[in-house]
Length: 227
Image 1 (cartoon, rainbow, N blue to C red):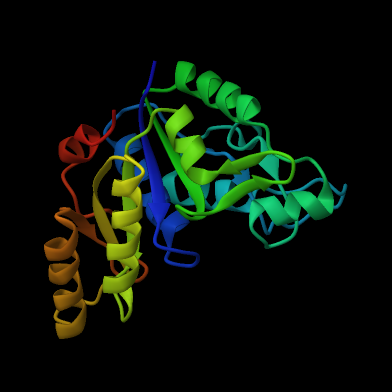
Image 2: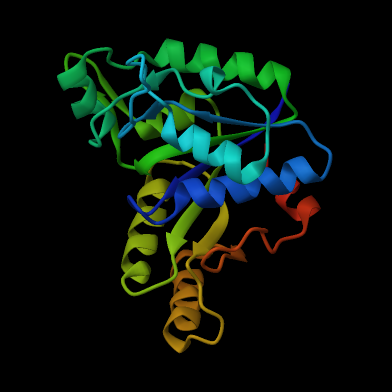
């Protein structure tokens, strides 16, 4: 069975998918058999035959260099760029937690390290009709620890502190933070990271610059946060 890690963000568009790709690349280049998984993926384009392309999965595969088949990376793929619960309400095919779990178990049996990416922030609804499935339900049923990805820029203190507090209140373990779009020497961003550490008690594992192709973190330290 694999060692696993969940990657969540402080919200949409903080670069969670890109950072996930760098994390998986680091694991892969150490010689480990690395894989990606995501419960539900929204905002995807269609192929000529009408089938949906799992965009985040494809992006992660391109960044990381893994050869994992796209079809085993995500059980629920939607076209509309909405929260999965709303996309499913419009398109049909709402998520089933048992299906998400079964897909994850199959992947975890084949690979050494599985990195699971969340949808949006930790409070994202995956399904909200007669049945309620929140992203935290996925984290708990898969028994995952979490890595928090945030933008290094303005506003991150509030979003990081609130996300960390919410996760702590829900007994969701957080192993550390990675800050994306970081500019070395930027006084505000340096202070943002320091304040986030002070207010949350969490450790910064890496700082990722724009367009960076490597995660500036020791691979053994990275592996150690997988459970």
